[in-house]
Image 1 (tube, rainbow, N blue to C red):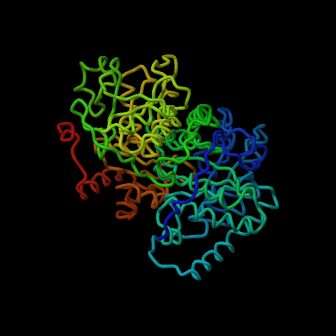
Image 2 (image 1 turned 135 degrees about the vertical axis):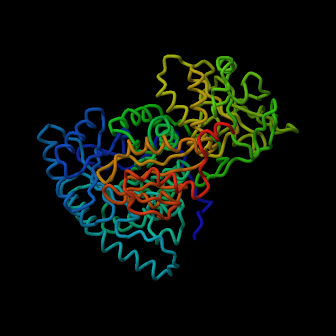
Image 3 (image 1 turned 30 degrees about the vertical axis):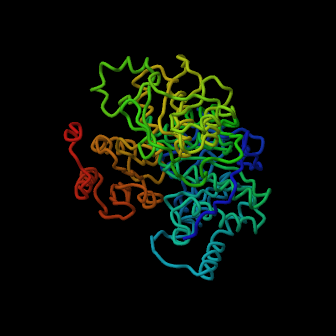
Length: 591
């Protein structure tokens, strides 16, 4: 398995990364175009009227590009009727065909749509999870086989002016990539570059890249590595980037996880088009995506003027600090990040702490011996580094730096000894008129981004006035960033035309039965495209295997097959019990 080069530089963008412009029908991606917002319809591709209706509903709420699954040649052929129906209604929203296993479906789709999305992990590969060593000659032969399958699509897209997204998914890397690079960000990037090199050999450049994963840390590392690799390959490799956290889930959790992953990269100046993947009606994705773009795109939020990052941007490692004990609470070192609240918030909930469950305030900000500094103040930084004992440090309020950049600069300046208290804002006075949805996305993107960089030993949210929502949001950001697991974690894909059951209803039933299982990760997948791969990042999986039938997984291994959907949730519970991960809800409440 090949390691990632630690010498690869990550370009830093005070504004948005400049990419070449690629046309998707009348809509430009990259270049001087704004960050585009897109989504995917959820109905059966053969239901022409439903596809037209859902596409128009998306366009009406501001979706700029609509994606439709084309799992078979028959589905792909029906894209012509969908396109013509939309145009007859006066709707000119560009259409993208989503292709996975069938090159022949891609070739048919390219006749009717403005863009084709291919997944290099399964476009010409069947997923077997086989373990074998590939010699260089065998690997080259595999690439030759891929070229034979892929080149006809490239040539057709070039001839028709159709764009293409090479969209890697962490959950569906090919066995060839898995055996050489492992289930890693490097493997994700190499999977895409194999296909890009073939396209470039054929003088085709209308390419967009994506590196999606359900784990924001993996997703962030993969996109950063991709952008760094493209920069090293040469100035004409400046292709646009499509951002997304796949299988983000629903409700607040789905929005928080999306904001952590997508928001972090937008703050880095990376991203030309985004899709927020929620297990909800897809029209609900658009306001979230537009809000993230408005908050973070092109703002230089994460740009750090330090000579070097204090963290490895291509892989996760928590910043090492000394352990402190403050007012009886251990903090820093190997301790989980702590939740800090203002005195005002603590006083508002003190009388009902027993009823808050896991959402407990652990420290009060005004009681902390915290050192506040401007990270650009060289004298203050030097004095802090000279202290004989470690102390809790944060960025001083009121300075004119974006939050992410300020804390990155602080971490780079003070070294690794002192624990850091993160804030969602450097303005100590919350703005009470700000909608909670905006507060949620901004706090998740800023604090979650830093946690995924390995920075942060405690978190303080001040932009939301309601103390209960502040506590819930604090813990949920920690969970989404993988910094502190305090409840069941769900990986739930968004619906699409491949889905073999009602994802929203099924996800709700599974959550109702299992949400008390602290620390258990359950994946809920509508079909087999990403299901088996994403099982590798979950303890248990519930995957559509056929209409009305469900397969159950432990890790990435399928262990129960073709279970009737009506029985599948109970059988999932039985499986969790078999593996010793089940507790009754009453028992956990008493712990």
